[in-house]
Length: 445
Image (cartoon, rainbow, N blue to C red; front, side, top):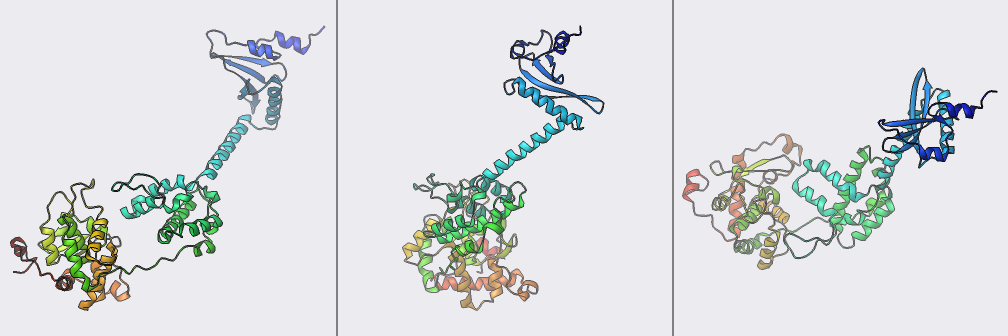
């Protein structure tokens, strides 16, 4: 009488009929790394027991003349019935010419894509903002980097030079918002609410946000989360407060009081810096970054870092030359500071505002000093192109752009006259010629 298949299976080495008890008792023999035990039905289902005691179901197959094996899963995740059903399903794949390992790899890739998509969808503005800044900061000026930091600034942090805590930046209210939730309605509500107290700052923050969204759209991993064409609608753009043109400027009758108040500051470096801003019309950071290597007393020139052209050379006028020459040479910076980490002046705004208030003058910003230079120059009927070139403005006409290449001597002729006129209105005389400066030809004896 022929034995039953079950009886034959029980006599076959490492093949048995899987039961919970047999699986529980299965152990890896001493001296081996693993033990493989095979089920009787389906015969392709196996149990792998490692030397550490881990147990998992495996499926063995033959496809295109080659043997293969893939893991189904641990015994904790799969009971015997489920493991047998999975082995039969995989056998169907093999019979159709599909390698189960390929299917498993495809499933893993799909799960990875789903996991990445979930992470992508969960990305918030606050999480991506530092990545955006880091990717682009090498192309930005120091001030532009600070604008991005202030735009999303966390409230309640200690300030470096004040006992007051930091205030929330305009974009802080959106920091925890997912990009996929950044809808036009949400942006409009944010703009209207924030603009109630600080419309100018919010308008600037919106322009930074707009550039950020365009950057995200250019990154494959963030593309489509908040497409600018979908988010920055006409309705949103209308909610942005229009920037108001600044008009702060020193008039000629204010110059005497301004020079007197600024000259009373206890730090001569601060005084020289503020006067340099007015007498050159330079941007505040251009002048603050001036190094001694950029000052040429012999050929009477200053080389400023220009945000438009990279750098520009302007005349070193007599009064300003005497003020700079008298400064202490602590380090490489002309307007040095013994207390600043950078070694140069970084916070002169309050000093200037105190001087303006002491003189009883209207509120005047650093850019107001730049505006003042251009305005006061008109009293000398100085050509507009001359003033623009000294201040570092872009040429505003075709002739200026392509047909005017003014030498430094021509700029000096007008710039010296402008300085002399400003000093005259301020009730100041040209400085007595320093022997060294006289020898170098900076001032006339």
